Each structure stands twice: as C-alpha cells, then as structure tokens.
Length: 96
Ligand SMILES: [Zn+2]
Ligand SMILES: [Zn+2]
Image (cartoon, rainbow, N blue to C red; front, side, top):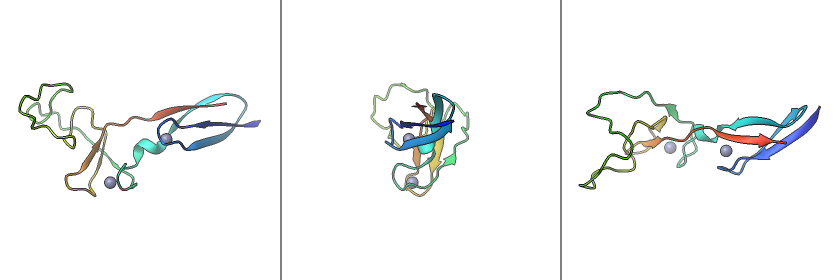
C-alpha cells in the first residue's frame, strides 16, 4: 500500500488516499454552497413543464435569471434570497 494523491480541478483541494495504485475519486466540493460554504440540500425537481424550461430555451425578454431553477438543478442553498441553485456535478479526481 502507498499514498496516492490528486488535486481537484474545481476547488483546488488535494485529496489523498492509501491505495495499491491509481484510483478515481469524487471530490465532494459540489455539495457545498459557493457563496456561504454550507452544505446544500439535494434539490428534487418538480417536473411541471410550466415551471421548468429546457436548458438553452430562448430568453427573448431577458427575464430568466441565473438563480432560476432549471432541469439541471441538483442542489439548493436556502441561505440566500433568492436561493442559490446549483447544477454542479461531482468532480472526478485522478489519484496517482
Ligand atoms: Zn473539489
Ligand atoms: Zn449558501
């Protein structure tokens, strides 16, 4: 057994594990709010078509805001007004 390590391309955190060889891990930084650092709540989509637009939908009136939930939304932080919606996915980090 030896120590392997890698750096998350998103948050810059160095992850170390004891392993027999190179391995792939998921950095947990996607679980935490970008603004306040609190752990976010998993977001359960309400699939009402009226509420959710497809990603890339046109926005001729410029009414869509960045904080709006989309089909891509995975986590939500309620510490903010409006809440922060996150579509971040786990970042895979290669340890070697
Ligand atoms: Zn990370
Ligand atoms: Zn937050």
